[in-house]
Length: 492
Image 1 (spheres, rainbow, N blue to C red):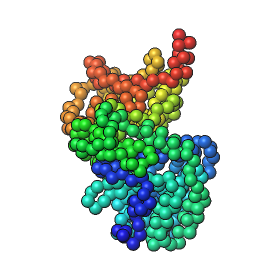
Image 2 (tube, rainbow, N blue to C red; image 1 turned 30 degrees about the vertical axis):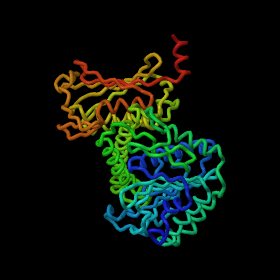
Image 3 (cartoon, one colour; image 1 turned 135 degrees about the vertical axis):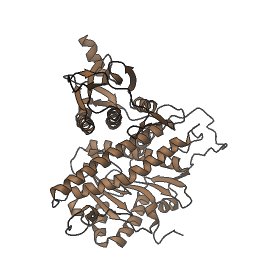
Image 4 (tube, helix red, strand yellow; image 1 turned 180 degrees about the horizontal axis):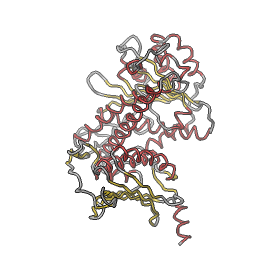
């Protein structure tokens, strides 16, 4: 018997004996996140291979959009389902013509929002259905009434089709006029079994997200709260491990849960805001307010991502940094995006920022998305610790087979306009294993140890020194790509 008049997606996958793993809430959420990361890598590889600007896939997700990479947002049509649709009229000082945004898919061809009924059990599930020419995939994270969670996924075309039928029936209930159009979008992508190489590639990406495991007994026994790997799972279940991570402190798990709960509604608000910004009939002052909301949401979402990643690193069984996808990348592209945000962060606190770059930046090895977020988070915390009127110099210089990025603060004397040694460093108090609190400003941020772990996870290194003439100086080292190392050696 189903819990409601229509089966939820977790019930569809359970009936079909798909890959289902019931674990603790923390483990199930980690499985969900790791599988989403693997799916994102799989889609990026597939879309890059095609190299077309046309829409190449369809994603149905809840309760918020799941992929933020530009190549995915531009190449995939995304439709979000939520039980609490945002009311755009709440922010509008004028009468909005026509229907609410989610009933006008033609105004937002790549991003739309559809409602779920509040009584629908599907409202308590996070899911992702992916439709492309090469494969179909469904991922579901369900929360049961007793508080337990279960993650499940399947590449089977028939199972994905059943999941779509269950979801499509809900569209018929809430928006019958849109069903035929949405069903036509789904049927554009063939119901074919995925190539075995696609599933292998997904497995490889999944393993890249797998935290390092401690040594222990990998037998089939179960003791001391250990959990057995799901025998039906064709891909190793990354978080239902034989050994639970040792000595995981409760505050780390609490931080993970907090970051997740904050990020989800903020992502929904940002999505609705961006839908409104696509309208052409908004007054300038409303657009300005919406852009401020979008900026604040993005800033806090990035902060929550860093908090979650830091907690994830601490919960790895070996206590070492979890693997991330490292690749050769052009640092100038990251800095072009980051420096304007650093300037804004400095200006908000009445600080000046000077960035000194070499004429040509070499290629480094890191994680492009994580590097941008970690650097921006570090700069945000750095500016919060300085008094108004301070000057920050950011200098990027080659250092052997590495690239050095250094942040040095100075304070401008109002009478001589010369730089002097900064004031006494602010008081910082530890909050649990990962956070620190600055009483003067009420700022909560990652502590130095957690920040260092983040840099290690993306292939870099952070050094913090106290210098009398400068105060606290932060130095980041990033490894150069092999070809860059050889070129530097030849120049010498």
